Image (cartoon, rainbow, N blue to C red):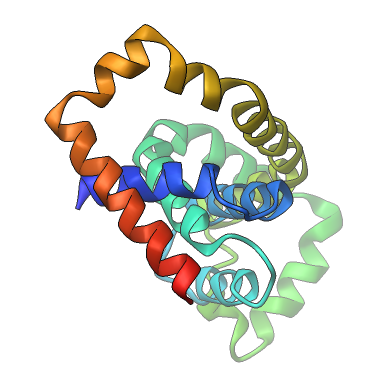
Length: 178
């Protein structure tokens, strides 16, 4: 399972998918990771992302990776959510939302949910451009250097890497057959 996930990561980074699609998938994964799951808001964000043209595999992979780091960000996200939810200017909006029949299912009034949503939305655009630059740098400079370096050649001889290479070839073969 883990080997296939690594293989898919490298297959995506080396694929014909545009840098923008991969970067948008990564930024969307960050947004999904910051908003706690188990509420209607997360489900709506998930569905909205999957109606756009992003790399879905990268969205899920980045979301899973950032979910591991999320417990370290609980305090700051809680404080941000508290600041937004207690802002006097937004009180009428939140009171109106709370009166709607479906809105409470989004758990927007939870400080972690609101903090994650605000942080995710604020970070989406900078994350997109940052990931776009990193994907471009990897494809243009690092991929060939890594593959042709002595260390890269030595790593290719390891049995684990052989398994990953076979998995990547299998994924690439299925993608071109589609």
